[in-house]
Image (cartoon, rainbow, N blue to C red):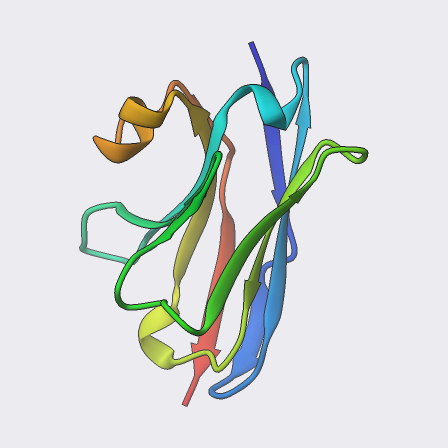
Length: 119
């Protein structure tokens, strides 16, 4: 099993940047496909980005967000640049197999961190 704890959320103006962190314990992040999902009020949780042997991004964040990991710190990050009000959501870190992440059903989830982008 792995435990995931997110941090780094907050309030930022449109065009600004934030970096989210997901610290893992129990197992190494390299053992899983790691991913970020987000959920805005009144909407379903949606895929944002994932990292395994490759990276993958939702079309809505390509070119603005970057997912990367530091195996020494057992942490996965989501660097978010050029933020837009529509990026406002609770962001969740997740871990699972490649198929689990692709189907939106990772086995492990963090508690979420709020990101709010003001216009």
